[in-house]
Length: 227
Image (cartoon, rainbow, N blue to C red; front, side, top):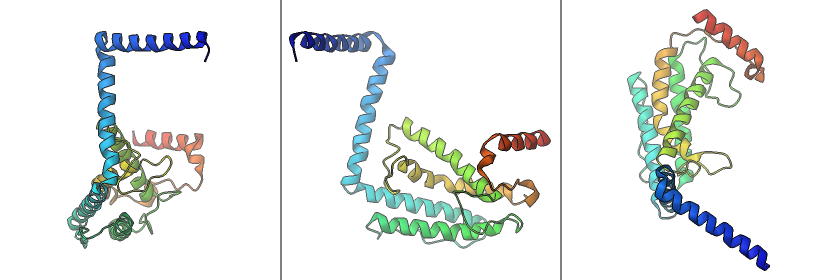
């Protein structure tokens, strides 16, 4: 690095240092942002450490246990058979995911019977679900996911570093973890409000064009009829 470049480098460093001092001393909002960033770092460091020190598997167990207990509340409310929520003896995440997945399938196989036969789905489906009930559940879970994501950011947690769900590119696994704790509330709400629906209350769609102008026109027409 020649002398001129060194001078320019030092000048930029001094400028940033001065701006940082002025901002800290005279700009409360900037000071608050810096403090918030420090707290975020501290919280997320503890979150990372929990994956390594054994706390992560305990958190994952509590998530699965709480999810099954929530499902049992719904099952008991509608006179269906609850599950055993004991996962204390499980020692690895892979086994927890198997238990969680199996209970989710059994759970939906029971609550689906609460809907009229004309709109009753054969199984739970997320991607490319075209039947009315599955789409209603998907929409409800999406709204819940957005609320959970926002809450985790306010809590200074890293939404993409979960304890139960797998770490994948673009997947907010901690959001998925916390979302599971509240799914049963969405289920209960939708069961109560969808049991009186009929097949004619839904528009059957088998093409992604619904996301474009045609879909918007159909939704607008339906809303006008309701209003």
